[in-house]
Amino acid sequence: MVNIIWGAFIIIGIIYGLITGNIVVINNEIIESGNTAFNLIKDMTPLLVIWMGLMRIAEASGLIKKIAKLMTPLLSKLFPKIPKNHESIGYIASNIAVNMAGLGSAATPFGLKAMAKLQELNPDKKRATSSMITFLVLNTGGVTIIPTTIISLRLTYGSLNPTIVIPACIIATLSAGIGGLTLDYFIRRKNDNT
Image (cartoon, rainbow, N blue to C red; front, side):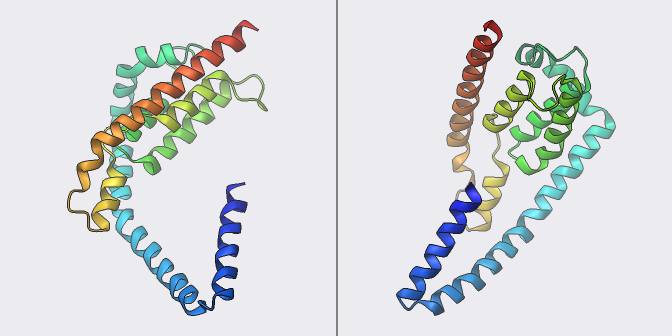
């Protein structure tokens, strides 16, 4: 659906540009957008590579398992249907830790592994379990303490104070996380009782 919306915006913009005689502007914008996208990827890739490498080292050294053990009491309350010491808890904890550092792209591999492990516990492979839904809500509205990606984007575009967004990001992600988990809890309770 989003592809259709964006496709419609692009087509409408091009048609409007042709009708108003702004073909040169359209051509310049296409070239400039490609250049901007390439520069953004070039500037962001080293940051993501460093964090993904650090997370890989943390995983290989056992640090991720230690983080998972620290988070297990909280995660066991959020995910009561996951067996204790199941491998998915470690991946969920890793995903949360990386998301807290504001590196959503680097958290994706942990999220995918967590979902794969949760799918192994799923008796109905065509329907998401309550644990999968809770993880999706937590991952989507999860708390970001240091919005690393946003800060690096602000630096890339010449912000004089790129870290000024940290308090606003913490408030926004706390609100989204608490609101999402609260709603998930009430829906899960309602569905378990019916």
